Image (tube, rainbow, N blue to C red; front, side, top):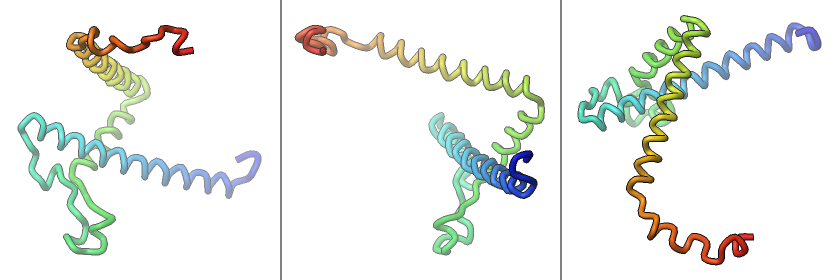
Length: 135
């Protein structure tokens, strides 16, 4: 703003606004698809009008190929908006909790892989010539 003036600053604000809107739309659509897949995986599928993306303009429309609507996507946007409105501390606490959950699941998966791994078969010929053969 100080270096270039008001108009370039306004354009930058518009670009950021569009960028945030597009990223929120894409992320919410992905969350909606993942929530629908989760409920299908546990055997409790959500109704199609809630979990599936409905093509706009109906099937066969030129718009149906490019545009669709999912009811779970606006719910995901509203939920993330509520979390952001609660404040930075609450958002950071939720982010920490989700990160710890992700790291914990990765560690459980890795521990399960180590438990079921057969090192005598899998790593028998890992480096047959030793370090000299690698270097």
